[in-house]
Length: 124
Image (cartoon, rainbow, N blue to C red; front, side):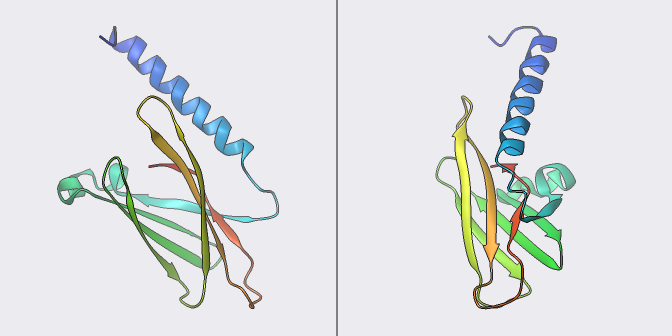
């Protein structure tokens, strides 16, 4: 049993706070950050019927669309704009009792003048 609703809410706030601190500690000051501008969990909860979570990160002339499928083993599809050769690295960890993943994507365009960018950290 979780306990009274106020305790459950307090535990959720503590978990979110710890995730926020962890994300802040992983910030790399020399990279531009793409902001999370759309998350279907928040912005379109009725679209969850198809079990695909859609995220959009944008900023600094770059857009990254992310589709996440699954619960335990995730399938992640990325679409980057502007298009072209791009190297994507993911960084993250499994945190918390539910195995939620704190994830950020680093995008680099080798051989170009485009600055590397990192997405804001998000829980998957």
